[in-house]
Image (cartoon, rainbow, N blue to C red; front, side, top):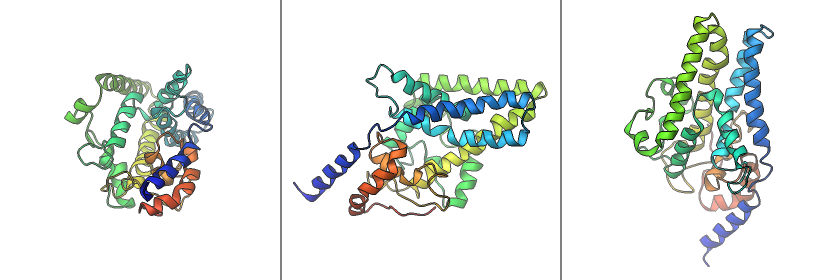
Length: 283
């Protein structure tokens, strides 16, 4: 057995320690965050809280909405063989409602991202590629918010790679959202719609694309198991990046839940160094 095989075996032994650990946290996170966001509507309509406070809370809700669904996409909350796997799917669907994206669409595009990481023709996340952190504010905050940004849901890429069910599910929700917002605007509640859903979603999505897509894969050009994702450090700390500084562990072992990736990273660091991985990149 050569050194490479020994390292892989050691790496796998470390990974096994962290699989399916305390994944109940994502049930409370995903559903709890959604319920807080949902509660903002009556609080706004009844004028219980100032709209500016509601806007801040809604923006935080949107920033926190994706990762529970991300764990569900990988089947990390409840094992697929369990009779309670429906809880996994429930969290996947409910947690991303504030972000206005269908769960199945997210799941299918995310699996493509794992399969084709940093491929300019096949990675659905390649549209977030930027020259720098400051440039990513423009790309993810403005360019990606335009119609048909990235691949665009009507492009040949999606028609070839995404199931019709996922697209249909997404579009039904998408149009319901716009009908609902239009109804609120015509009824005199446009500022509430703007403050709880429309603007927080735009800010939250930009934050998520920068933190979860661009920075872990910067410069989004390298390929290969140990090269397409990196470890990095942010001045804001791990909490504000939602653990994405250790995203390299997720790409190596997607079944390790998010909150266990820092510990797995520390345990695997000596192996990753021998693999010449980037482990201390900046923003």
